[in-house]
Image 1 (cartoon, rainbow, N blue to C red):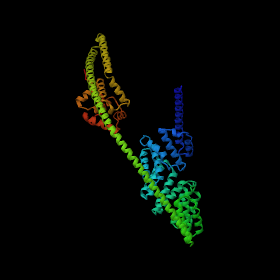
Image 2 (image 1 turned 90 degrees about the horizontal axis):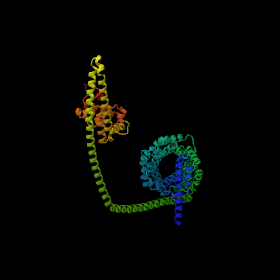
Image 3 (image 1 turned 30 degrees about the horizontal axis):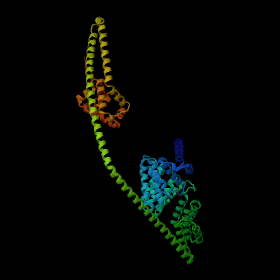
Image 4 (image 1 turned 120 degrees about the vertical axis):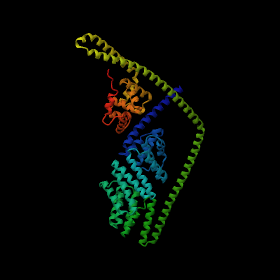
Length: 574
């Protein structure tokens, strides 16, 4: 009873597990359709999977990849940990699915970039680029080039970053993503601004704004307005610059970014000597959580208080600015130390794995060597037996073919004699023709009997040759894949069909197999398209083959090769 109960429990659990798998597969298909056009719906669908921890294999990897992708597209702060996306990376690293492998490596690179591990991030992005090299995933390729550009820009490698951004623009153009192009144009403008190339800055900003087509709700619009302010400020048009900064602040939806626009606005007010507005602007930034923005703000307030001759406040802001800067530096240092610790642990783990693999390799080496020896011996024995069987088979076929040829040739000689006798009787005088009528009919019956007998011998002897010819004619077999036995069967069949066509070509012109096969196909009326298929070549290569065959036979330029082979060999007269 207990055994029966246990079986039922296992059955119900298996049924539930299989249903869960099917439901997950259906959800994944829908999520992939919604990911680009409606990422919030994709995330809601993924959250409907009640027991994701029960997924395994490909479904587990797909879940990890799709969930990471959905969270990223919904601007959720979910890429700080690499444990989720690493499941997908490990599964797809050596798989044939290059698109999912590329996506997994891309998001793994984003995780590493957020963790300030630039080396791992760059390797992941380049690995993703390699996986997607021969695919049509242009949008993902554009994102990869964009993020590689960010890394190069952070390293002050501006020329390489410019090249990455230009490639990204090319990919975005292939999918018609004007918003993606606008973002890249903004990045290019910032690099040229650092290089003091104002003309290029103006061109890229103008092009990016034109791509938005007046859409001020676009996320990239505020940063473009900030760049317009920078352009005007460089031209000392400070009032126009301030207006652009105000537009940027008005349309920015992310608080930390608006803090930087306010810094630019406050600095412009200080230049215009509107100190009250500058102070109001800087004070509005003090609630920001961005350490670097706060440090810069306190430094601006320090300069502002110095202009107002309030030195005590100025000293306070200076100390606050320096303190925040030190905190930021300590955080960076702590991050570097943590990264070094993680790197040490990773290298230690890799070393342990390497030693373990070496031990396993030593243990398996003897068995692998023995297996190779046995496998090689088996292959050698198999090939030897196969060669022996093939030789015996070919010899048997040759003997059989020779005997059939002798019978056919004898019958054809009789047929020729009968034809000559009939012609002689027909040439007798008309008045005596009736007396030979019975004799002519008897000779014709004998001829038909011999013809039918020859046809039967040919069909029985060269059934395999007929089969090979049908395969060639139907495009199911190409010359390169023909075996020696198949070629011999085809040669024998054509010889019997066309009065030793192949044999006489060999004797008179010493043609090799490739030329003999081409001559046979021409004799049988193969078209150029069919010759291209059976030789697996280009039309021009087939024409060159025919020209070489014509040269081998010794035909002049006026003689048509197809006509020559069609009537070869010529029938002998009585």
